[in-house]
Length: 357
Image (tube, rainbow, N blue to C red; front, side):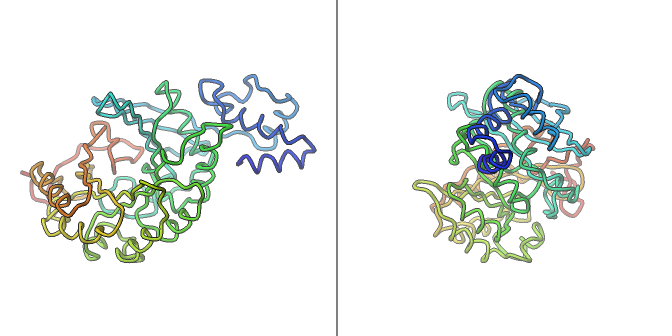
């Protein structure tokens, strides 16, 4: 429940309004190692025992159970979670390469599996399981705080699932994470990424405050994007970019466009130049993500020289362009690798089955 819904619930129980704040702090506050009542509903709380018992009887907490936590050589940590109905999801803690910046990013999941069939993504191979509840979303953050021993500085909805397909629960989680009674995050520190669900972008644009927006673009022509991201057949590149132009941005903020680089698919000089032309009128930045391999698709990661050349050509158009160094790829925690299952050894083969050189 959001704080407003809790206030309504307290009124229906004939209780004073201040009880809503007490209940919210019990659920979301810093007690119990940052977990609130998520970890231990029976822990001491500043609400009457009768009210706590009544709330738990009415709506028992269904906490995520922490599964394996894997740590990469680069410090990235992948957390596995088990839901009350036996599903498995993952979230990833990513420390910054630059220790002076002291950033810690948490990559959050919004669904079990994913309904979209992006050809380069391991999560897509799972199919769609179900939406995560707002509670299951925020619990990932609270568990991350306990495991890291500190708050993440940035939250990115770039884990398992398409956030716009579960926008009601993502919005509820966003509302609760911002609230000063709880985690009190800044909206400027939260980013929601989408594969291009235009209706979701428009709904997100109506929020006030709203999170940052990231678009997984990954192609510069409809033909190629239809191949790597079938959602493009419903909302093509032109329609998608029109939606981003409607998205209100706070002063100094930019749209982020993610571009997974696939050798001989979307990494040509012509693609780099077209990318600059497509995004040239937008307040945008581009994150180039060299493909992170997993067992199955016949893609290849481009060479380092090709990656740098692509970046330079995009920058020549005037767009800020950054190469996202793979983080946690040795534990299948990098972008596009989350599948909540054991992965077989990965053959780095070409798109048509030829051996990678």
